[in-house]
Length: 168
Image (tube, rainbow, N blue to C red; front, side):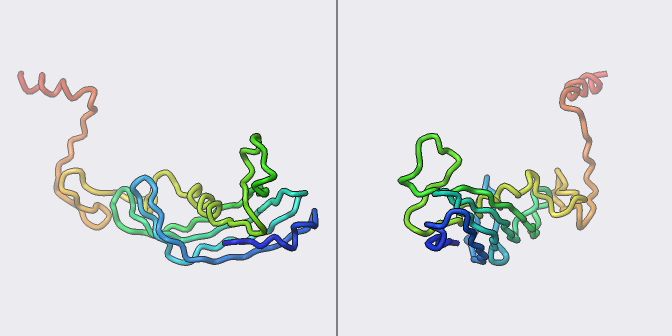
């Protein structure tokens, strides 16, 4: 996902549109694996702002991962936004923390595309809002079957009182 800015290099205010689609390798984040089902797409425009190149656009991907409740695989659609500023490495100063450096006439937006998609991944990955997860005792998927396990829910702060009840 590289943008050739040769046409924009000496033309402040000019715009260049882009539209990419690329197969990407799976990502692993915090032990969770995300496999891209289809090519990742990115579209938008680059604007020359006097030696700074402003990249704005949208990213889209569909990933396959596992539900954190029932462990079943499911697909998740991600829609991210690009809004980055690039400058040549020689034109960066120490205070330009928000500006991304590049060499030559090519801007590689792939790392920022991936970052924009990662930011869209929800904190809790559930296959559906109604996912019931796994039984704590037998491990049965409660979305598929019911189990006969007796799960006694005791507030852990009061669990010690159970010992006193059994004594009397």
